[in-house]
Length: 637
Image (cartoon, rainbow, N blue to C red; front, side):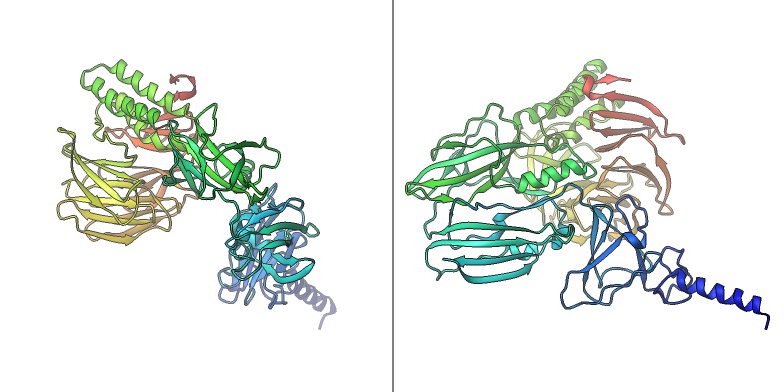
């Protein structure tokens, strides 16, 4: 054998073996999965950073979250990670603040996992190391933890607790996940009242060497001082979700906020207030982190602390916006309760009603009277008032009405009539094709109201499985399609009120569109998916999965062949529903989209965004027709 040829062959074998390091010979280390040439045998995946770029092997750090699995996955020289057989693992970047937790049961081979950016995020234990807080037996650890981390990373912070009395250890809880730790109640019914300490140790697997220890002091008191947040001396008030955060109490600006208690020994309540701002998207990392931290905070920290008596209305210079109220009760013996917090919003109901009236009462009236300039002025006034509302929640709540007003004023063909004179907050509407009936759904109750437009009288109400977030009605007016907050679609016979519910999405249905012949129903959801249904038996025809954020708008042509879609991050797509494929992308330059509307002649598409309305031609280039800058009193460009 020729020695030179042998050396060449050996060199090739060495390169082949070393290319993927410890990975089985024959895998292509330059491919995405180190095994694209042998897909059935491939057991490897790659990690990408928060920027979407592949991580190099030297930048990958691995640690096990389950003590019983000491064997860590193999990482090749080319950055390929062998799929583990069992357990949960933390993958992190050694150079940047990126990490992700993977489960061996769910991670897929020949795929990639993207690390999350946790820059600026923090976790803190809220307790006092000097002042003893009086707590009862129902006290839970959850009230101590304040985290601005995404839930997907919270298990990277195992927490241990040591309950002590008089320097003697009573209980030890080791390495609990944050969710498990939050449910922990350290004091039981048989423990004696008195002074206790809880030593909290928080390990930070994301940042090695940054573990924290706090010695929290408590006074176990079966009759610990306690007060409650109250609106007009009552404890019954509605609550809403804002920016994916639950339980914001809804307060009318005319109502009083007070503290109430059944404890006769309450001396005073110490409190502080912080205004919260919800005008951000999930891509605005800095504001999102601040929001998470502020909505979980219970201590006043550097905020100004005030005191008040039970039943005394709290003073507010400006009764608007979203607030975090943090407070502690003090009894006549000097005992101080553990801090509590309540999130609430001053919902500007009167101003919302005014905007709605301008958009869907005044505008159609001027259109009917052929007063186009007055119709446009009312529509722009409504939109200007909307964008000047203090919170993004309120602006989003009323945007469908102002959108209808603007499109009606411009197109001068669609007529909307206000029929609901009650205090019920309507969040979805539909009108029958003959224009006789208006249907109103709400997030306040699980009811669809049916109104007679001519007489403005309520004809009937229909109960639904869950709160209604979107709605459509068949061309004959007999079938109602209700998109629900739980992700289901409920079809309801208007006359018999019989209904059928199907599981359609994983999260709230944000949009429903029905073709003019009633044969196709299109649903959009917060789960980022669009689904097209055949309405006869509600069979799924196709799922469209190009968007990555909540579906914020759908517009369907009359023949049901073409669909325009938008997600709230500004991405807009065009679909051919006959083949179920994307046929185009609309480049508008917008960073967010709140709504879409297609003109009656299908030649223009109105796009609602923050502080701007773009009206575009539906030609091949989707050229801009004109835009309205709502920040400049409705200036048209």
